[in-house]
Amino acid sequence: MENADKEQLKQMMVKWRRHLHRNPEFGFEEFETASFVASRLREFGFEDVVTGVGGTGVIATLTRGLEKRSVALRADMDCLRIQETTALPYASCKPGLMHACGHDGHTAILLGAAAILANEDTFDGTVRFVFQPAEEWGQGMKAVIRDGLGTKFPFDEIYGLHIKPGLPLGHFSIRPGEFMAAEDSFQIRVKGVGGHASTPHLCKDALLCAASIVTELQTVVARVLDPAELAVLSVTSICGDNVKNAISSNAFIEGDCRHFSTETSKAVEASVRQIAQGVSFSHGCETEVNYERIFVPLINEQNATKHALSAARVVFGAESVTDNAPREGGAEDFAQALKIAPGAFANIGNGDSVGCHSSGFDFNDDALLPGALWFTELVRQRLPIK
Image (tube, helix red, strand yellow):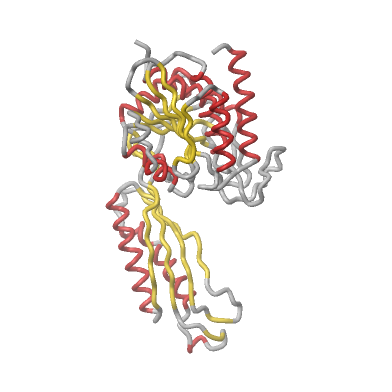
């Protein structure tokens, strides 16, 4: 592309991204977003655009030449239930909803790549453009796969990216193998006997029991797991009956665990159940534990990582590419796609910004064009004209 064409595309991508930022939608509710995406794709000349995949997902297909191989490129579309505080002119117009994790930018990047490739004959094969719902839930990729990604919409390799606050703008980072953690969630419900705050001796205090459980859960990583295994267990919510002059009859604890192995997950679940039941028994309370595995570990395939790096060095420059990024405790449901075909997931820099999932986060528009160019260079290298 000529520089003038790149600048024109960048301005269009900024326009798309800010429109999406202004109009966020939560997981499996991305109806307006999906309609916007599908409309842009058809404007680019796409004839094969399928909507409603996985509920609200969009998959568009572009084929050139006779090669049977296919590459899938993925972006996520959903927002978070966060009240935006940026005061930007394009800030969310929907109270309590915000693109606080960069999915507006990811979607604009993949649209940019689609716009470029739709107007070129620089590859031989098939490209699947996957606009996925509900990543934040950890359910969107599963739903898209159930609706045919990998079967009805087959592919040989799949690639994705994510914006990374703190990584310098214009930089690219990835690692082969384990890259992003699995996420388990747990809920513990404690049942006691409530009563008047002046007569605690006649009660079985569910909130006090829950507080003791929270304290004991801090020993799981420190004393149960192998120190060489990366794991984080966090209690993120605790509540009782919320009556200031009454002993709680019930208490509820929520939390999650990040890890990289099935063995670690099983050990954590066993310990959470043992602690909850044992502490509850000592307080004369009853307990129920629900433990769910939401995200699987994201494991980049070795060769796919090399392909991602090869394209990145062309777009970002070798001096701005990191091939041994540290493992991350964050989870990403792109990992589900890596269970059905080789692929790789990478980070691109957002510069010095507040972190994702913050009410003050904003995607750096200067990261849009490099992201789109990386996707297109990847396609050209993986589906070369012979």
